[in-house]
Length: 425
Image (cartoon, rainbow, N blue to C red; front, side, top):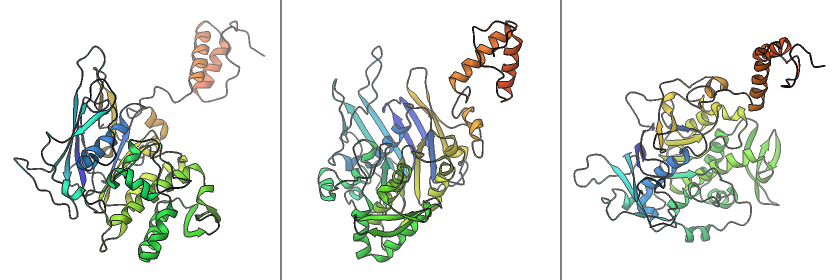
């Protein structure tokens, strides 16, 4: 399944919002070259992560009711002097793929996935309910955790790979598999499945799949690191070649571990559901990744999104990011920015301003990021002090101010106590 559009009403910080999304089978106008990528930008607390959570809930609502999902403060909390908000609605206009069959009821002509949540008095826990929602057209398909239909995976910004003991059976008993695939968006303590948990079993039962995993993981890694597909028998960790030096996974940098962790987890879930007639990179679905630039060096940020989009062409990606380097790798059709309405609720929209290929300075000063300056506040304050001194007749301060404007080193150290006309030695 792909999400053609998302409609939000009173969810988290949003009052009302609508997103028309890019997806792999999209045709017509405003189709980006990377038509499986959607990128959400803005400041901390602006509502980026809420979009990912809204999609996950709307897509999988029937599977979340008895899977361990706890709706915590999802209905928008209104300000004290405004009417209370008691419920919210999430709606996805969906596009079916593969063996997904929609059975539409009533007057519905388009497949819509709905989820309603309501508050429980004064507490922080909300309730997901479907009693007043039309029967979901996908509830039957969601009952099969290992079906490739309606494949949705999500990764929160606190994602990490479990480095200690990890019990697959315990995780399965506490949470349904459909929910576990997105639980990292809602639970900070959720960990990712380590490679050594599932890859050896795959190698023994499906060697051709094992080779595909190694090839696919290497396809998305930068050139200085390669996955060997072999394990260190002493500590049972998989080995990577970092600058041609054999390195176990736990010895890699945080950036590599964070990236390899969620990508290998995604590939593992694909292995769980892929039909025999399809390759791993042919499975359709949605992947939601918060802070795609997490721990990544700027050089890697310049390529990570196009690389992932090309490696998984049948997956619809929704990323969030703070990075102008990531933003410059996509077209304006791929980008959404959040904002704040007059009533304090969050909004989200797309801009006509181009983003692809622009420099970091240009993007940071554009409407996409909205900075007034890219210089540190202390540098700005020093410049303002020099300007005031120059306005009072200090010739040396005027020269220093001009030197700063031309990126030259200042002739002196600014000091508001310096007397006009006196050079500080």
